[in-house]
Length: 73
Image (cartoon, rainbow, N blue to C red):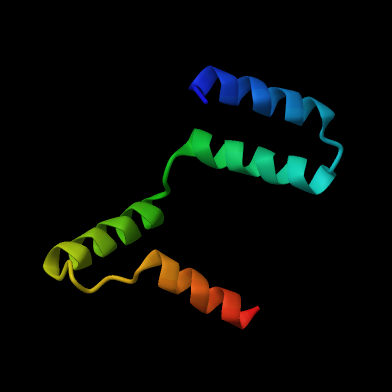
């Protein structure tokens, strides 16, 4: 699906959406995207990138993380 098709699909879905909580979450997401990253988020990302560059083998496998989360539910 190309980007235009995705946009049209989302627009159609959004125009029919009646769930206030989801709409508020989408609005909050939009606002966060408009602002960009805060200084604290940038600092945290810089810290994590530096840790990865120092030891790139010290990472978690995404599938294993998700399995662990599923067990907790």
